[in-house]
Length: 246
Length: 54
Length: 227
Image (tube, rainbow over all chains, first blue to last red; front, side):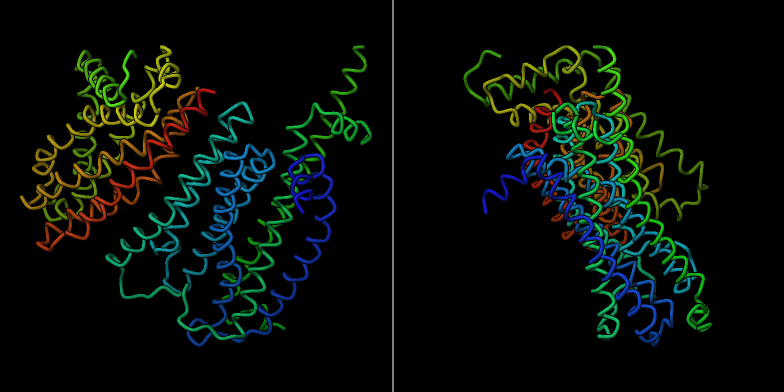
């Protein structure tokens, strides 16, 4: 068991093992996504109040969940990298940043599109959307800091600190934005949070959530492999890998 | 079937959202693929250069 | 620094920074002028109707305070970084977080505290009631230290970078949002005559959190930036 973790800590073994997992994870992810889409777009009934437009929820909500989940993973991996000097943890952390940012962006855009037929405008300062917007800036800050520092190891450690500071602040920001929203809210109630959700709507939602998580696993492994190739480019095994590829 | 695409009049909103999701997911998949190919090609080029210099 | 006690090191560093800042008194005025100028721009941009100004005044002043704090952040570590003193701090026997706290406190005294003095003037410009102005001063007193401390983390992360100033805003402004929300709303609520104990408690909690955690984060960030 410990040997497994020890092996995983080695970039070379991780590269190989991740490469073997990726196709399987992709297939399982595709399976969940297809079933989830089928359930969400075809099987689930129309909503009593929102009609068919509520189906956007099946991509918006999982994307929003992922945006938070990935930030926490990024901060956690960053912390592990800082405390135990694990290269692999640093790699996972920085590989997650772009993916997380894109999910946040997706959550914002789908949230905005969902809001248009409901509230008539393309943007509302809803508590959730506003929190997502700030989260996007937190992600962009991590990415910008990483790009600004030249040495990869220093960059990884600096962004780990930033990610940890961010993750501590996220609940504070979320709470403050919610509080702010209750003060200035108009008569409309947010539809992003149905009080009791029909099980036929819950199933596709959970299926899509799992699908997105698996998707994140696939992409983070792919990105991590690229990152490892770059970091380890002067080692024997990478040279052999590159040498044999043409 | 037509009803499915029509989405009760919300076709634009629903399909744009799902379309954007597809684009974001595909972009996330393709970027590392291209990057990996590029890195390996760059490394191979560097290798060749170093061997020629010897 | 040739001292044995950490608290003595703290006081010495604090006095050193304050003395250095006072030697360039003109520099100290700049954030203040910025603060007033930005606030004054808003009536020019949106119209000078008193009711309108009174309703958005607190928000404007607080956003201006955020921007002023951010612009002045660079000075926390910049000059020490450039002349090498920062590395001496890292090598010192005293805990870096204590030294960082001294520097941040000095920074706040130089750039944050003056904002409190100027606040009544701004209240005048935006036609705020006496209650609102008083609350403004209290929220600035509680909030600007948080801005300095949280900002110091961002500066520590970017001090070694060439264009650090530009991404500093991106790093730090999202973290400033809770302070902005609670403080601006406190002033708003106070001008409506309602109690603001909740707001002040929240701001105090943020201050306590910043005081306890940010020096540690800043110290860690400095060690990384200078490695």
